[in-house]
Amino acid sequence: MSFKIFDSVQVSCHIVFTTAYDEFAIKAFELISIDFLLKSITKKNIEKSINKYQSNKKLHSVSYLKLIQDLKMISSKSDYKERFPVNEGGGLIIFDAKGICYFYKEKHTYIVVKNGDRYPVNFTLGQLKKFLDPTGFYRINRQFFVNINAISRINLWFKRKLKLQLIPEFEGDVFVSREKASNFKHWIDK
Image (cartoon, rainbow, N blue to C red):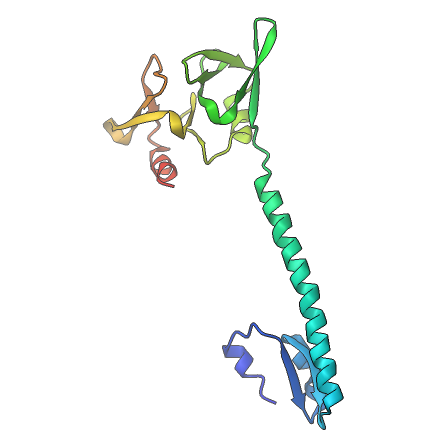
């Protein structure tokens, strides 16, 4: 029996090995074999191998489908916050994370929403990194996390910096730090 072919060819189907020499049985089962038949082969042996294959196929197809479903469910769940409750006038206002335009740090960390209102939040920017989905938010410098949808224009600036125009507008200049500019360009190009 020649096993050398398996060194150069990737076989993805199940195999039933047949031979007159039983010393090859262990090697056969190390590969993808579902059965090993010694000569002389009977109809009963072949039927047994076919039944074994069909049983194995049913078992694996069910488990693969379950595995795919489980992976989809796990990937659809995330550890990122979907909502941010903020204190306002003795109550709470809840903002959907996707509707937040940006977070910035002055004395406190603030959340800015589409209409331009800002609210203090009890998170540092370091904590926000764990809470924000990186496909939608990017930390452009030490003071800002921006939502991709809040960026209206990117201007090239001196010393390879990028200057952002945000919606709603921020009172001062908003720069992507020189160190982050390359990664930021890659992020917006996804």
